[in-house]
Structure formats: C-alpha cells, structure tokens
Length: 433
Image (tube, rainbow, N blue to C red; front, top):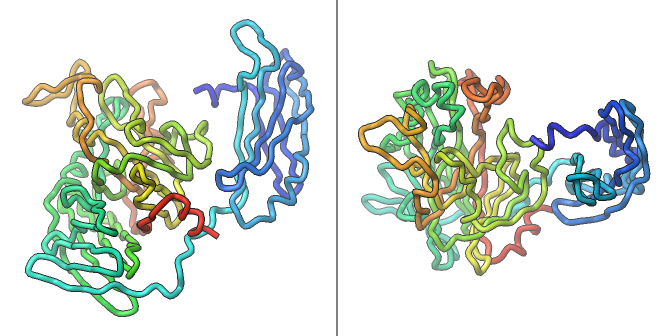
C-alpha cells in the first residue's frame, strides 16, 4: 500500500547511460527537503552506493546520472539498483531518514545453473514395491504404485518427511477474497485432484546416459494430466520436470500449478534469491524487491486473524532449505518459481468451501483464529510454477485482474527445477557462474 501510494516515482532507467528519471507527482511541494540515495548489488552482494544531488519541482521530471553504472552493467551477473528518497529532517510525524519513496530496477538475467558436464547416471535396483536409485553418497526410493519419491537420503540424512515426496498440487488455502468470489466452491475439483490417491500411469524407469524415472497422473475431476520426470545423477542431484496439460478442463481457473512435499523438522532455515522479504504474490509484489534473503522457517508465516493462504514468495531463482549446520537442499528454478515453506500445514489454514460469519461451514466446528493452531513438526513446502493472484480490488469479492488468474489452456505448461544436496551455503554461488 505504502509503495503504490508514494508521490515520487523513479522511471525510465537506462543501464547503458546509467540514468534515471525522477517524477514529482506532488502539486505544491518540490523535493528540496529530501535526500536521494542509490545502492547497487550483484545477486545480493553490495557493489556500490551513493548519494544523488537533485531537486524536482511539482509535477516535473528530472534526469540524473548514476556514476560508473554503465561499466558495471557489462557484467554477466544480474545487477539491481535501488533508489530511495528519504526525509532529511524531522517534520511533524515523519522522522529524519524515513524512506518516502523507493524503486528497484534489475539488469541482466540471473545466470543459469551450471552443472558439471561429466555427471554420471545413478544406479538402479528394484524390489516388489520400490525402485531404488543410488549413487556415491545418496539413495532415493520411488514407490512403484504411486510413482512418488518417498525417500531421499544424502550422507545419512533423510530429507523427505514420512514418505511425502514431491506430488503435483493445484489447491491453496482459500483467502478472504477467494470466499468473496466464491472460488472455493466453484473450483473445488482442483482440491479433490490435489488429494486424490496417486496411481502412476505409464511408469517408466530408464538407465542410459541418464537415470530417469517418469510417471503420468490423470485427474478425472478436472480432465487434466500431469507427467513428472525425475533425472537422477550419481552425486545425488535430482532434476524434476513437469508437463501439465489442462486443455480438456472445463473449469474457468486453476488456483495453483506446482508441487508439494514435506521435509523433516530439523530443516529450520531458508535462504533465497528473489522477491522478499515479506510475503508477495503475482499481484502483490511491487514493494518486494529482488535480493538475497534469509529467514528462519518458523517466521515465514503471516498470521492473518482468520487462517488462510499466506507466506508465498514469487520470482525466485533459488531456494536453500537447511539445518542449523547449513547442510540441506538447494532448489534451483529453470526460469523462476514461486514457493511457500511453512511449519503450518495447508490443511491447518484451509477452511473448506464456504464461510458463515467468518467461520467455516461444515459438520465439525473449527477455531477461527491462527493463534488457535499449533505448528507441525515438519516443513510444508510448495514449489510452484505459478499461483493465482489474491485480488480484492473492490475490498471483497472481485476476482484478481485477468492477467493474474491461471486459466486452462490448449498449450501445456512445462516447468522444472533441480534439487541439489549441499554441505553448506557457501556452495551455492559455485552453481551460478
């Protein structure tokens, strides 16, 4: 809210010339009472910062040059520059140093994941119920009936909680705005699809230049199909590819397209490169700047009075979930992904199809408030291709704008990510050169 209501705007940034335009939307005051600053970062690491000397008259635009930025822009790294306008002196309720306006621009795409070209395929064994894929330091177990990855153990550490490995997932805990638009009832087939018992169709295991495990899931409630392919390497790296086809779906929207898995409770920390550091959504991300952030997972929850979808993050290039020792898993997007990582289960904050007087309609009464629930001893993780926006343009009831909705399409969705076991977070930068 604060970001979109600011009265001063930074626009038309030119990285080749290192210039930016500053527009003063105010009608009566100039900008002489403010100080302007910039900070330049390379993938979260500060390169330079400085102060700009400028004044802009009401309803006017001025252009200013950032020293030496053009030379930095030639890097193959992604650069970001943040501009801030701060209050110079105390004035009424505004203290000195208060950020009155801000903006971020990014230059260059984030570098692609760099894996060694000589990665060897893993080895395969099987028994009556499982496919066992192993390598020099890991073992992954796939259930033949469901096709799910039910165990992923690296150097003796298990990273899948109680067999709940990645599975396609299309539902989110309804928001107040979702209830206002009656989406939970209208789209409940996607909830049923998300929870249906998985039966792998066309289950295939191949070992050649690569070790792959693939399966297909059909969702009769929505007439959708999702094919998952795992490519497993000898060092424990797993690539996950999804091919999602909803071309025959007759529902108007899809709440989310992604995968859900659960990690053990000794995974306590998150570090990521993308939008943060507060929660953000496709239509609520203007104030969430791209940077490298870290947090404890227990703090990655927004405690709305009524339990509902919360703690989502978009435009993510990578996410590291680790133990206190920094050992854990690095999830790397093909392009970008979205994620939730929480100690609160989705089922804890999901209230069914309808509300009456802010309480869920159903046979069993449930508590109304988030503080009535306790976190679970696990990490509920969602890696999403996309989640629909949260809307609320008319306070309650209106759908998100059309560009923030997910509609079934005749064109299938292909998305993927890579899971990399890491011994410590110092290894992360080595994968992006």
